[in-house]
Image (cartoon, rainbow, N blue to C red; front, side, top):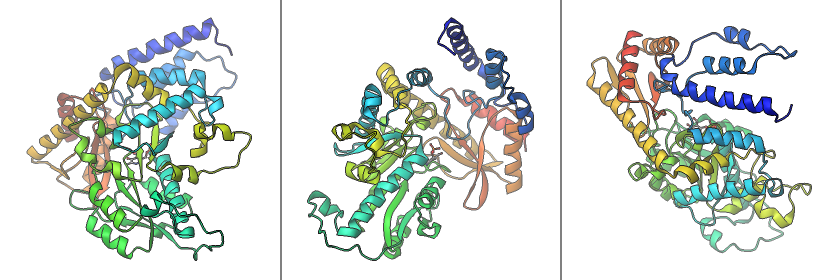
Length: 467
Ligand SMILES: Cc1ncc(COP(=O)(O)O)c(C=O)c1O
C-alpha cells in the first residue's frame, strides 16, 4: 500500500465525489431510513478484497445521515466547514501525535497556539492552560480531575483556597490528611450526562452528584444551588452549563461564580455548546462571566463547524491541570521539555493533531464565517419559535436564546414521539425529541448554515403531515 499514482487518482476522485455530494445534497432525502440489518447486508466485510473503492465511498455517502442537508436540524453534530475537512486530510496524512513535543514539534505548537487563542477569546489570564481533547465529555472529565486535584490539596494541607492560591504556604511534612470525605458535585438537572459519567469514572457515587432543579428558563436555580452549597457537605465542584443540551439554556455565570467564591469551591462551566458565542458581539452576553470559571469545556466541533473531533478543555490555573495528570514516564516525558509535552496534561497518549483544523480555518478565513454562521442559525431558531407561537397546533417550551429550541404539538406524548419518528423516516427533515420537565417534546438544533426560512417552513409542513 503506497502513496502511488493509483492512490493519488483515487484521492482526487474522492474529493470530487464528496464536493459533488455536498453541492447536490438538497436534492436527496436527509436519510434513506433502513434497518440495521439492511445496512449490515450492504457493508459486510469480504476480506478477500477486490471491491471497487469509489463504489464503497459512494455507498457510504448515499447511506449516511446527510448533515449538509438544509433540512437537517437534529443533534449537535455540525456539517463541517470545508477547511476543516481539508485539514483532516492533512492531519491524517502527517499523523503527528501531539502528546510528546519531540514527536510533533509543529503540531504541538499549533495546538498551543489554538488553545491560547481560545483562552484569550474567553478572557482567561496568561496562567491558564488547556489541551485539545476528543470532545465535551472528555473535557468535562478532565475539568473534574483538575477540580479534584485542588480539592485534595485543600483538604490535605489547607492549601488551595482562593486566598492561599496567591501566597501558598509551604506544606507541613508531618501534617496528616483529614479523614476521607465524600466529594460532591453540584450540577443542573439538565447537565449533560457526561458529568455523572465522569463522576462515576472518578469513583464518585451517583448520590454525590447532586442535581439542582432548573428555573422556568431551564437555567440552574441559583437559590436552590445556594441551599445545596450550604447543606451539601464537601462540594468539590459546581458545574454550570452554557448552552444546555436540551434547550440551549445559559446559566447565570456571574451569580454562580459569586457563590463559588463564597463557598470556596471550583466552578466548571460545560460550555461545550455555548462557548463559541464569545466570538459574536451580538451573542457574547449569553456567556457573561465565563472568564470567572475555574475551568470550561469548549467544543469547536459543535458551534465552530469543525469536523469530529475537536474539543478543548481550558483551566484557569494551569497547575491544577498539570497536577491532575502527573505521571512517571521517563521513556516519553523528558524533563527538559516538560512544559511542551501536552501528554502531561491529558488522558491521551497517542493524540491526533486535531487543532490543525481550527488553525487552518482561522488563518485562512478569520472569525467571520463562525460569527455569520452562528448568528444565522440563531435567527433560524428564532424564526421557528415565531412560527410555533403564531400557530394553533404547536406550543413553544421556551424562548430560544441560541440555536436549540424545543416545542410541542398540542396533543399527548405519544403523538409527539410518533410525529418525530414518522418525520425522520420520511427523510424530509431531521429533528430530535427529548423529555422536558416530564413532557415529551420536539427539539431542533439549527446547526446548518444553509438552512433558510423556507426549509423551516417545509419542515413544519412535513411535521404536520406526520401527525
Ligand atoms: C452541553 C454538552 N456538554 C457535553 C457534551 C458532550 O460532548 P461530546 O459529544 O463532544 O463528548 C454535549 C454533547 O452534545 C453537550 O451538549
